[in-house]
Image 1: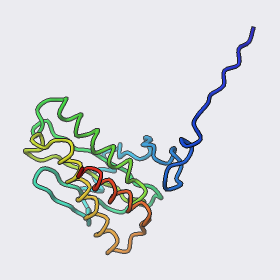
Image 2: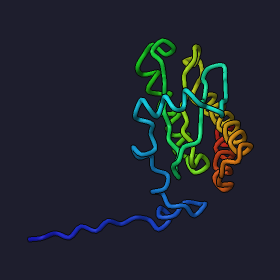
Image 3: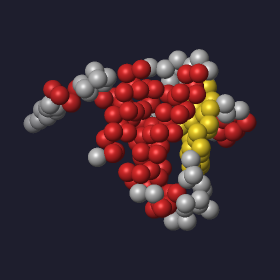
Image 4: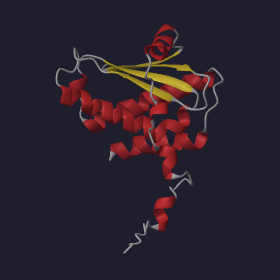
Length: 162
C-alpha cells in the first residue's frame, strides 16, 4: 500500500520578477562571518565604512565570489534579548535581499546606543541608505558590482517609505 505524494508549486513561485531563482536569495551558513579571524580581518582593515547615529557598518573585500555578514549587537546597547534578536533579523533580511550587490565583500554591522528607539521601518530605511554608501565606496575602489541588484536596494528603500 504505497501512496504517491506529489508536490505542486505554482508556476510563478519558480521565478522572481527579475528572473533570479528563489534559491539565490537564501541566507546559508556560507554567507555568515563565523570565525573570530574573519571578524578580526574586517576590524583591522575596513576601507569601507558607513556610520549612522545608531549603528556602524564596516566592510572590506574578500577573495570569495559571495558576500559574508557578521553581526555585533551588544547587550550594552540593547539590554533585552528580544530587542537584539529583532535587529539581527532585520539586518539579516536586508542583507539577504541585497546580497547580490555585495559580491566579494565581508560586512560587519555594529550596534550603537539608542538603536532600540528605532522602529522597524525607520531602521530598515536607514540600513538601506548605509548599504548604498558602502556600495558607492566599494565601486570607487574598483570592486565589481551587479547593477540589477542595485535596483533591489532602491526598490527596498522605496517600499519602506510607504
